[in-house]
Length: 161
Length: 161
Image (cartoon, rainbow over all chains, first blue to last red; front, top):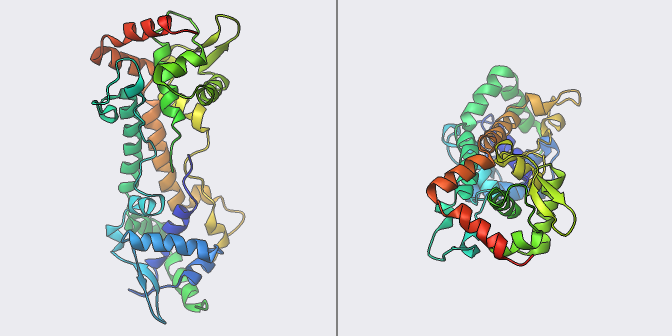
């Protein structure tokens, strides 16, 4: 069970977009060059973030990507779900239905204690990711690394489109 | 990001083994037939559980698999890790190292706030799974479904090896 590398990329891109000039869109090429990431593959993640309403894709010569909502309104879970999908890590196959005394009429996803335990762990994971927003990350980074916002802004300004 | 179906199978097999006669080994064939699972594929999971010290593989005509430890000493996390591996779901690729001001000397797994957040979620997931043992599951099932232990024992006795 492995989370794709796109989650890390997406979160860093969201964070970086909080530091560019208000509402300014940044191209996929610039976002990719910032960390030396493969542009086409990153672009796929950015499109997924747009479909999920985390980013907006802005067309035109000054186009690119920007956050679709305030950083306070985007949780880390929103970004993870945009990239990894809504499907929980554990999907109960209800094998109890095929066992002795099993019934096709019972929803074992709900009644099976093993299913409940694995779903509780999924929930704990989601709850943790939902408890932090991009704004929280931004505030923590700015406190710990005060030069990051200006440095990030300057880099995007000086990079070719 | 998806947990393999083997986890569900493995947990049900561990639970079922708590209900057979003390120390009795059950063949992979019997364990698979209980839920109509593919025997060879289940056998791979049982071998993984043996390697992880959750089950013991007993050779010989009365051989098969039994729990290697008491049900109190096997957590749900032990079973998940035996099947899915020790690797956490999130692996930080340290893309900050390639960014502006990045350094090969810094361990960004530790310093990056995004990495910390995703690892905290992994930890919450593990903590939840580690908080329940096979004995806890057994006790909950026996309380809710009091006929399950005897029915399970009878089925294994009456199934051909």
